[in-house]
Length: 70
Image (cartoon, rainbow, N blue to C red; front, side):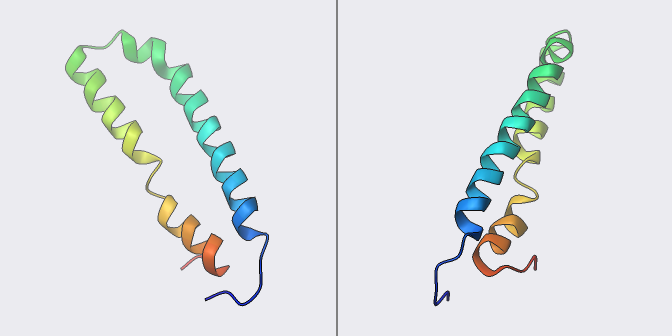
């Protein structure tokens, strides 16, 4: 448990919001191509893209809380 305040959490929140904005921009750039695919493939692509941003989130949240990546 933290004994004194740290800037990691506000900095981490800003990094997270910026990263999500960049990721959303990337997905929007792919949207015209995705829209040309069959519906079943669009569904699969959006499911994968919707879950992919969660993969690094656990370690990032650990870093925000403890300052270590593991």
